[in-house]
Length: 137
View 1 (spheres, helix red, strand yellow):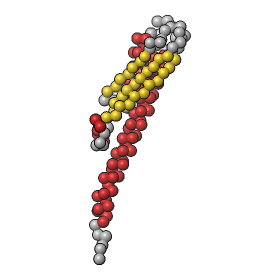
View 2: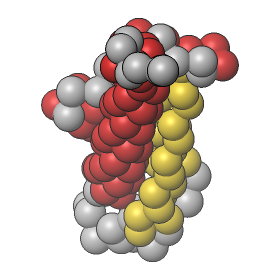
View 3: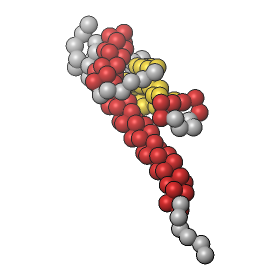
View 4: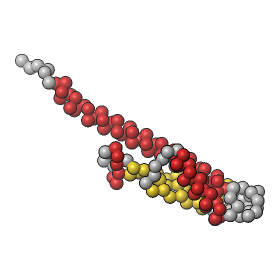
């Protein structure tokens, strides 16, 4: 006659690692989703800050500063950050578009998941119209 003695131990040995893996996947998904939202917000803020600048050089400086500040305020720790501002269409008295691109590499290797390289690269871009009435430099 067979008994169920020890079956709970076997079930626990099989189920506990699976539950831990699912929990880690949920945490990784939440981390990536939060970082995507923060990078989107940073790109939007960078394009808007650059759109009121008076010169291409000041647009690049303002956009990069705002993007890095926004990422820092949202608590996103990027292993590497890149901010690119295309202000080639900006000219005082003329309408144009500015494009801000923000790239952030976040770490996932601390979660012990099989992620290639242990990181995830997140990129976002936003285009904003330049204010033609912003004044001369």
